[in-house]
Image (cartoon, rainbow, N blue to C red; front, side, top):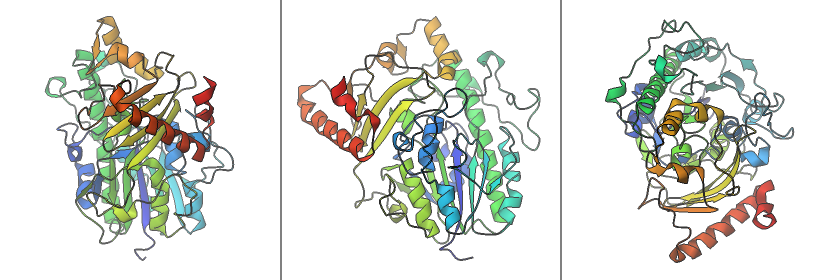
Length: 448
């Protein structure tokens, strides 16, 4: 097996923000993710392009924005969004160049004909250690292989905060650890909730459950690394770790503030690639498919994708010959959560066009029901973290933030006359982006 045909493992978490040791937080504990960062590259400016599970995963596996591939929101249940039948996905393209493909865990794609895998490996609920064990026969077989490993952690498990600690979730006996794994329980009082959340009892309890679930995810990744090493395949395997969107809390998931879209991206290259590099290059999930194809020796730069391979910048801490801004487009979460946003994000600025700004911001059902939000409503909180509740619910047409001066995206500069040229420039760039990506919402500039 030669390094120009490496195995590929794409690890996708469910609702994991920039929380863990390699991203500078004391909790949750993430030794396995930290190991990947040491063995590879850690991106600090990596972004999903839509902060909703199914829509984001459609971007990951096609290299196309979700409004282009047709997955405007959730696939499951009555929401029923799905890719257009003529979209060609990553597993198809890898199979065409000789890769054996397998998937395990959360799927969240439709239709199946667009996302075919050779092997669907046995599921294990939220037991990520067992899920990795279930991958062992697939890894031991012929090379090269593509493994799409998708955890259900740390997505909310539905446990109410009064039942905390979460032991471990609805998929197993609630009074026992998972077989082959031991839960790590965090103390609410010892945790620091992020700035975008209120420091309340409910938020602390739910944050500790989130940290517990991230650690469960991390242990599963650790077991997968052990299996790759035991089979002699770790060194010649490209490993990419990302999350579909930010943590499942109001002010993060479903928003295109950085708490919802600035996510972990860790890349361990095969062979003698860069090690221990931290890169501030701007990358998005539209880049994942072309990057993987680039490593696989398949065509990746022929204009089929909205992203580009970031393979050539992996060794650069501050890429110079690279893009200066990225684009994001979110429209639905569940079908009842219509709140389209189009976004430009550079190193300095975030510009958001809230297309449905006349509507109150729409909640995903789990975020509305979560104890953190319900507690804020019960207590009549004016502030939700660093943002007012009113500002979270009622948004202007345009939002412009200077991220250097205001990294928490609180002070909207869009109405400041001094920034009128910046706003005008970003508006024109968004229109051009929409034209180039066949965005159905382009007409909203003139229609309403």
